[in-house]
Length: 200
Image (cartoon, rainbow, N blue to C red):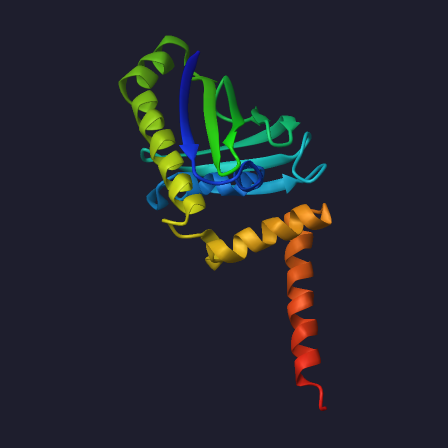
């Protein structure tokens, strides 16, 4: 079995960092665009919690790979664990753990454990190329997420950091999902525009 692990401190509150990682499709932001990585939620359970199934596909060093994962452990603001349930590896599991350093800094630790197929040949291929590529990819990915959440990178789907933070505040205030918070923010904006445009 091969284990790759990395940790990093991100200057963002625990709730923001956890909310970002709780969405499986955000995993794609951690990898270079040329990999064409896609993460598609197939079955969402408990607000992306335990039982959520998602598909990962992409170009890994010239080889197209695809596998399905299931979230098997989900402790809000502490830990998310997903494992492969169908795919090319003998075993593949990712563990993401969160630790609040202070109100504006979060430590994130990621660990991927996997076994390559093809017995000793797979192990040799892993040692020669895949482990090094995966190790570098995880580190670069964490730097991308760090830049994104600290406001020095770009937010996917063209949302500003301020807007993302507002959505997270609404989520906390309303005790709802990110999607519901976005809908609430948009409704309030629309209602304010209607009220402002009413004749006096």
